[in-house]
Structure formats: C-alpha cells, structure tokens
Length: 153
Image (cartoon, rainbow, N blue to C red; front, side, top):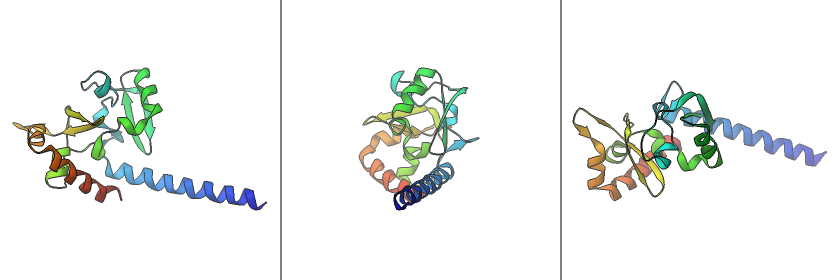
C-alpha cells in the first residue's frame, strides 16, 4: 500500500511539474497560433541547411510547444531528440537576446547552426542581425544565454 502511494505521489508531482514547464514554455517561446518558428520545420535547418515551411498536417508538441514538419521523416527524427532541434532562446532573435535581453521577432530564413544548435535572427528593413551577431558571437552568445534564463526560470 505504501509503495503504490509513493508511486502515485511521484507521478502527480512529475505531471504537475511538466504542466508548469509546458505552460511557462508556451508563454516564453516565440509562437504564432501556438506554433514555433512560424511553422518552419526545425529539422530541415540541420538536414537541408535551409528554412523549409512545415505542414499543418504533420505536427508534434514538445513540452507545450507545437512544431510543424515538411515530412514525416523529419517529424520522426525530431521525436528521437526534440531538444536537439528546438531553436535557442525560444525562437526569438539571438542577437537581440544577447545585445539587449529582449524578445524580438525573427525571419525564419535567417539562421545559423552553432555547436549543433539552431539560432534564429531578425532580418528586415536593411537590418540583418546575423551580420551583427557574427561580429561578436562569443560575447553575444554568453549574454543571450544569461538573458534567456530570466525568461524560463
């Protein structure tokens, strides 16, 4: 009897923690109608080295965030290791996160893979922040990592 109570208690705590994490991520991430990366396929950035629009018929939800995929194979790849393919800083502009600690929209086609992680950038009105990021990547990445922790902790 005690053992089953402990298992039930741990399960309840775990599910409550997951629900809080999923809710926090859903509010912290850059989502459009609950979908990350404006519907672009997170796996394609790694496999095709370009931004590829996902399909609304091929989706997966990971810890409260919905991702769309261009192929079932990409969805299957994502499901094997979702955290590997998620964009850094919740899909917000990496440069803005590093330079000012702000959540700024992105252009899904402006990205960089660094240490096997996806970074997205704002690029509009003659302002490609990826170029600015490249000038001081090491310092901006450290600052962005610290800034992002304030949003998710």
